Length: 226
Image (cartoon, rainbow, N blue to C red; front, side, top):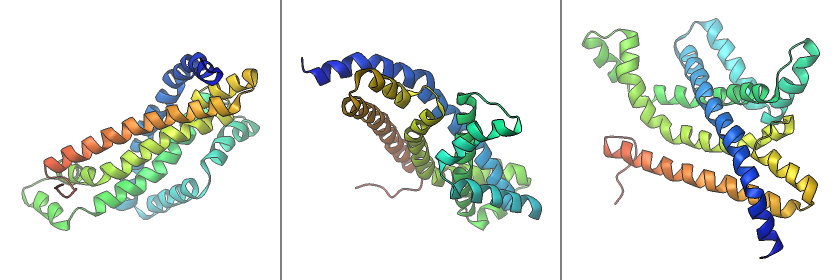
């Protein structure tokens, strides 16, 4: 057996374990929490009072305009200087959540804005309140529009979790770094990590395609494929 293949097979369990214990939970938790933050920020910007609108704009401006790695460093290494101590996983979760929230807020805001005004009027005409119209009429339609960009954001987040290695989160990429430190085979191990990230992204992309096709089948946003 070639040396490179043997090394890949020996290191595979460690990489998969790190992905299962840290990469996957960090991705799922960050996206769910970030989506919640993004929805709240989008609604605040669209329908909130002016001070809230300005606050949301400032939040989005900061987190979209600065590198994610810098945000993680500020949270994990910077906050202890003002007495706020966070473990690595918590710091990464906060950083990814706030970053994802900023991006998803713009996606959701645009999706809600794409719903025709007549849909609001139709909901009000049958006696719905604002919250009922939003929940039963506007958000379901906006959700269909938002699925592709939100799916792309989720796939990007899977890859971005590798940045958590910089603040000592023992996720998959840092597991590869630790093995490199003992084997001195960076090319083989980093290629293996890249293949695993590619595999996860490919599976998610296939699921995204199936979801979009399903939404299209039930009156979604995509043109019917010939």
